[in-house]
Length: 269
Ligand SMILES: NC(=O)C1=CN([C@@H]2O[C@H](COP(=O)(O)OP(=O)(O)OC[C@H]3O[C@@H](n4cnc5c(N)ncnc54)[C@H](OP(=O)(O)O)[C@@H]3O)[C@@H](O)[C@H]2O)C=CC1
Ligand SMILES: O=C([O-])CC(=O)C(=O)O
Image 1: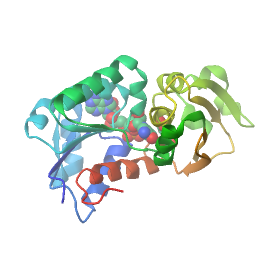
Image 2: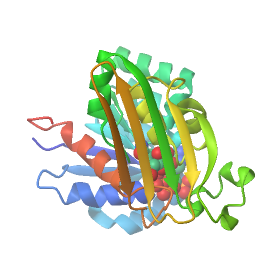
Image 3: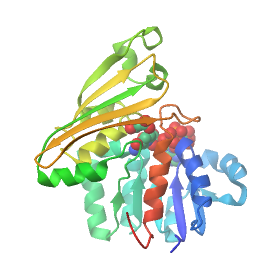
Image 4: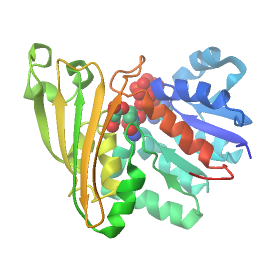
């Protein structure tokens, strides 16, 4: 069964790819809408033509009762739009998972979803293994450790710049060690995966995170290891940087597309 109407928030690297990936499916959504800031409506409308409706009016989009809203815009957008989407009874797929490191926002989203019956869906994003981690949690987790390694340029404009001279690095440099909550809040465009692991596993304050700038790297490498009563495993995912935004791995959008398409799949894997 195809989705009727999908609303995408944002029109950056992930959202632009998502429009094309969804449209290319046999079971493509009947209608796509893109929510952007008012000043970008005209430019994005021209870029999309008749491929999607472009609007800056979330209330009007929600009044049309879309099947699902997909946030691909950043932590601020989860705060600004998340509660309104869920309150309308519409499911919300969240790319900017690290926004849930704000305990008040996470509680508000959960409570709003409970009251309306909508779901807030967290896709795997740039990592994988979330099914195995979530299952291991039920057996009793003892540790979840994550290391995110990216080329120095992917850390530009972040607090990593205060810890080292990114352009001068000649070997890998670990500029952050802390919890998933601290990582997600200090690196909102780079550490959403740490928050995803935390939500599936040991929580924001018990999941340990290292962030590394590697001058020899050309890709975004996500490594994590899990220990539990039932299983131990490690994963290493090597993401190709998105051409439009090298902070973001290109794999992220495919995970989000899968989460969207699964909303109406007859068999959900
Ligand atoms: N879960 C995961 O594994 C991953 C999650 N992410 C998350 O996804 C987010 C998006 O990534 P990406 O597409 O690469 O980022 P980009 O910076 O390429 O695009 C973000 C887009 O969102 C728009 N935007 C931001 N705030 C708003 C708003 N309030 N209303 C409407 N539009 C808004 C921006 O527009 P403008 O330029 O006008 O601000 C921009 O077009 C990241 O910020 C990150 O939080 C990223 C990678 C992996
Ligand atoms: O896309 C990635 O490589 C991961 C990322 O930026 C994030 O977790 O925010």
